[in-house]
Length: 367
Image (cartoon, rainbow, N blue to C red; front, side):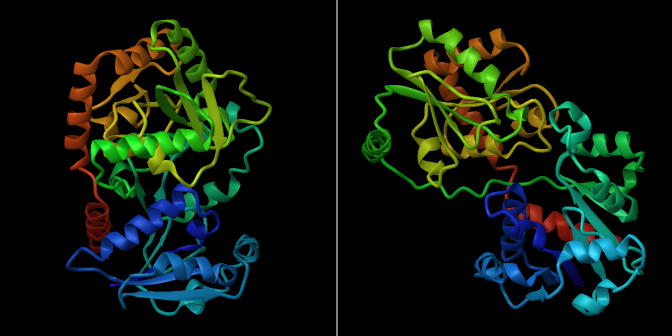
């Protein structure tokens, strides 16, 4: 099999979920016995990052930089079916994209991985979204991969796609967690907090983004509501960008923004609060499991599917429920031990090797 693969979407943002997906999938293929030839197609200006991502891949992975800007090609393709993808990448049997770079009228099977449909589920959070490129790609694609059963249901409902054209392939966790003794972990935690001048005795970690989907406001409100019943100097650390025009003024809440030491923050934490309003998959849940900490997440969209009974589920709109869950993972040692044990067990169901193997199975079916 020769698969043309749109690597460009991953390279545009090193810290995006697309990069995590592409890197995990391709390196997972290194671990399976039967893998296709992969033509990794991207804009030439990303050649340096492509070289980094492809490091360690076998001869089955072929780099194919393109001298043309993809937005130029997409503009041309609105009116004409030229240049053909074959003229750009060479001969292939199937084309796989996971953003919206989908050429028109391909004679080969076309496959599109859909990560989420948040702009359709919560349009109020994305008033300026340009959905047209994505909708054109959905219309042109012949088959789909959804990263969760819930995303598949959304895709069927919103775009009226036949279920048998959509294959579900879960993602996996890419974090490489070091094996540390209790003493080493204590030293790492002390150094991490000292680096930022923090005096937390215990802390929870949460993730944020520029939009309000991650539900940071309610997370903070629930945390403050729980504080009087928590141990003194308990903190909340929110990693990632905050929504625009949103600020935090509390000595108990620390917002370092995007960080490179996510692993340190996770493994030194006392729990993860991930009560997003919507997720196509919810990778932070698996990251919490892998870090060996208890996880609180939402009871909607794909999050219960990923958690698989190994996390505390709450209504993300119910501040009281979030507050009670925060108290549980700080105060109930027995529950914490049970959640950590179940999280480790649940994590066995996910690996990039499994993701790669199932993706190759989809390729074979379509060919």
